[in-house]
Length: 269
Image 1: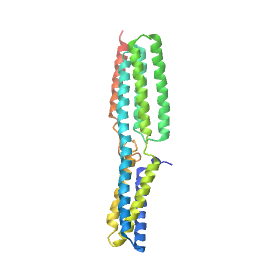
Image 2: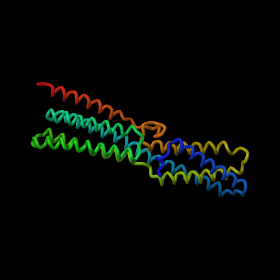
Image 3: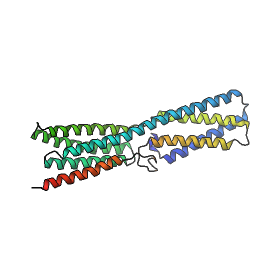
Image 4: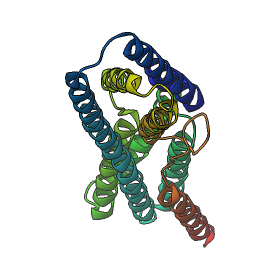
């Protein structure tokens, strides 16, 4: 079972509880056993390793977040180009193509503004594959009608680019920080906070506040990493960090104008 199967609220509560338990257990052992300078050195090493692991994991999630943002812009631009070139096709084919492109853009918009689950992505990809087939079928008819037309060649090229950018975007949506990396981060955090609690045995009266604050900060940073790694719609169940879909929204509006232009042209005698 993946971490994405759980809500961020559940993950934060479980993370914080685990880290606090590690602190308490470490402190209890610190009270029972005599501490040495070596333990303090080991604590510093573990905290340094934890900082390195957090930095590494945060970098992984941020690179995937950037790839999703670039994917939105690239795919929206490719769809917009295909829509504008579709206006150059014969009237009937232009209306069919633009309608299909509108459905394609809206399906992609629905996908990226909904909670990202494997079932949802699989369903959306199946639906969009059907639209792709319909676009190719119509494009083939245009080429068969006039295979010497430079316009049809440009349109087919734009469809190729659009499908390639779509595949890249969907791949970016499915890319996650591997669960084994997150498990390693949790393991290092638990051990580090455990050693911190162990060393706090030297000061049994005023140890909880600083260590508890540290545990809350570590749990919050880990939560932020997983939030960035979830390309959701800014909802509590999917993550508050969302990717702007403005380029795709603008593309759908542009396609609406293209369709109106094509229909107006079709209405002319």
